[in-house]
Amino acid sequence: MQAPIILVIGNGGREHALVWKLSQDSAKPRIFCAPGNAGTAALATNLDLAAADLPGLLAWAKEHRPYLTVVGPEAPLCAGLADDFAAAGLKVFGPSKAAALLEGSKVFAKDVMEKAGVPTAASYTFTDAAAARAHLRKTRLPVVIKADGLAAGKGVYICGSVLEAEAAIEEIMVRGIFGASGRQVLVEDYLEGPEASILALIDGERVVMLSSAQDHKRVYDGDRGPNTGGMGAYSPAPVVTDALWPVIRAEVFDRTLAELRRRGITYRGVLYAGLMLTADGPKVLEFNCRFGDPETQVILARWEGDLLPALVACADGTLREEHVRWKREAAVCVVMAAGGYPGAYPKGDPILGLAEANALPGVVVFHAGSRLQAGQVVTDGGRVLGVTATGHELRQAVTRVYDATARIRFAGGHYRKDIAWRALKP
Image 1: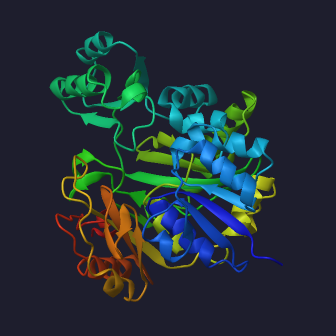
Image 2: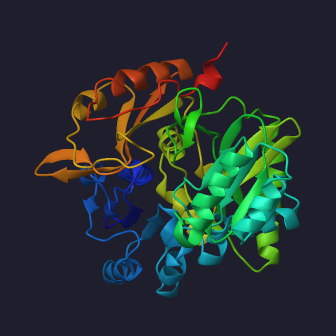
């Protein structure tokens, strides 16, 4: 049998992790990545096609007829890439535009949750900055303010004072730093408790839960500083106990999918639920319509066996529990970021020490914001690398990952030194 062609769309750490895992598949696929990065270039053929270039991607796929297209980032899914590919008779892993609205619009997602009875924070929606400010003056603090649309993981503000909240409204709605994504905002009640990331594969009918993970959103140690796209993650997350799994399955995934079906929407792909584990039980903070980043890095590091059959089964409607198996190891990912991130940051700085870090036991360095320049790997994004390590238990994985990060250098690079602290604290 001829090696199947797989197209992976995206250029971040999540896509490098997907390419890395698919490259180990027993079917020995030929992998193309659009546009890819310096990491994917070692395992796949990078294409000069942006993830947002839907016509270009469709034209390439029509010519080369990939066995499966795996969509990494949310923007092309929200723009309808899966619909366009399906209409052309192309198999794709990723939800339709209507289903991806769960991530594309927080207002839509909140409406789905409220109608479905999914536990989540109470919220108010505003399209007018003055009305939002008036509400803030009479609400209980702290509050969470969210831009409605896609904002690359940066459209969420946790505000402890009216002054902070009004500044968030000013940035989102008046200055328009997120463009059209900020035309509506949600003002939500603040929830307390540990967070957890729970992902599930869905084939339109069946749900197969993936192992738990915990992300670290704040840029600095001790969960300080602004939110980012994610500074690190680990899996499994001990805070997700055996008793919580059936609750999360029934109250979050089953109810959400039932409400989508009631609206005539079929969900195929992966659904990510960001949860707050409150004293009253798990509550949904957000939905994502794709694999998380950096959760993908730690989840795929623990995936036992082939990944491709599970992704194909999601697209075909033939998903089974036995498609997913886990190694007993723990995994930790530490994001190495460019100087200035999550604000403005430079590009083009040489990255040193990659081979040395990759040679360590249990370590793989996933590229997120990198590119090749005259044969040298240089920085090309805010989150530059996702250094990932496995270990027999979490403490060993943490030791290994920080041994690896210490060997990598680029100008201004910074990373958190406390990833997985919640699980390791006495």
